[in-house]
Length: 400
Ligand code: SF4
Image (cartoon, protein in one colour):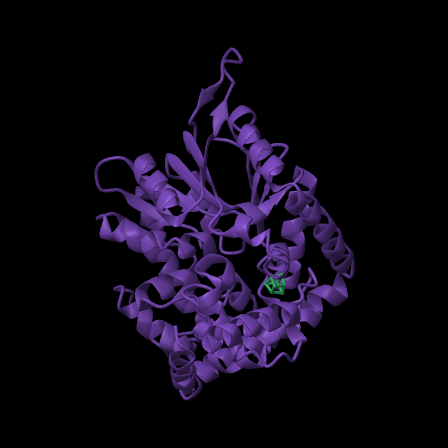
């Protein structure tokens, strides 16, 4: 996208009073929540340093850890493991797993599925797809992109969110309390969980030594979406790999702390399809939970980014979203300053990795280099270095 178009979109967002009010309300509660968590549990900062060291180990030996994770998934977790280099490959694998016929699919919020535009693809193929995270459901109905990596509908006021949900047939109004709206959403989604043929999720981390996936959430939707349907498909980007199960667990603790959601209501470990050996110690797969677990490890430009000293830095990101809350540009335009999926400071770098340097280079020209994002990032990602690198690429391209 050209810089002029980005500017035009940002100006529209900045002049949208609903959006400004939505962002103001969201930021005014989320920023103190993060500060409160880090003050109350100061060990989270030490754990964040530990996570950086363990991620360094994975990034230095990525091929080895991909291989180990694939082996663990198959041999230990009894999952079906796949590797997808591109968006097309990942989508093709999901199609293959789903097979023929129309399916009811419940989805957990996952930025990787946003990257590959999975929901849009599945709907186009005739499947009935429901996002089960409330914010993401609002985004699905609005036909929008997530405005924050953790809180996708943060830019919408309660009144606006109710207006959007009404389009999906929910009996909600802006004058209702937050609690009343949430209870209507609970009613709406309940039978979708029961009817679903397939549950699709991402993962917040995955352990190479066991193939165990960690999912962190508060709404209770992810356990329902990944336990009730007979088939669970998880799509996990490779930077989520941690060397072992303890490291993977620590990473999700740090992520929820820096997202201001600590301790999270639920921390869910999936290390295989459901099974029992209660009769004669004979293992049977598929009891109350899924009979099949399919895990797709997804590259999507990450191994290429490892070769680039500036972009490699972003692979330490645990997607806590704290950098967005402190960014002056994000505060007035949300993820409108961003690529197709990601926005804000993390979005500038993730767009370069997932959509190409050219696209991110024009975005970077708006970055004010104020450095607040770098200050608050648990993994000390050097955004100034990344932004300057992208700005230089932009200047080089326009001089050609
Ligand atoms: S770049 Fe840092 S602050 Fe931003 S989402 Fe990633 S880990 Fe969190």
